[in-house]
Image (cartoon, rainbow, N blue to C red; front, side, top):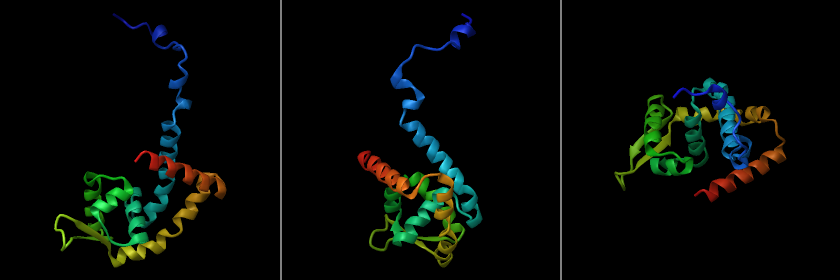
Length: 154
């Protein structure tokens, strides 16, 4: 039976809970996508993807981690993390070595090149801060709320 375009395109009766502007996921999705897009030119300058940048942030902050620890900290599964780390190793940013105490674990550590990259990356947060359009106080409140949501989803 042919579809009547007039009927197919007509507005459906209102269902308040299904309005796009009532979905928490939508502004989170758009903001995440757009903020990551703003990072791209700055990360391109230092040769990192956004996900590689996240790995580097963890390693710069806290030193060596197992792949499992990185996955937990970054909410990434090993299927995503392993090829990412392999590429980072090929570009000379990290080393991956089996843990001598537990050969099932792989320890990821920064190379000299990876440590030096920190200096170039140090300016990125300030550059991103100018792209977002909120005050420092609003940013602190947003962090607080987002981390609260993250904790509640665990």
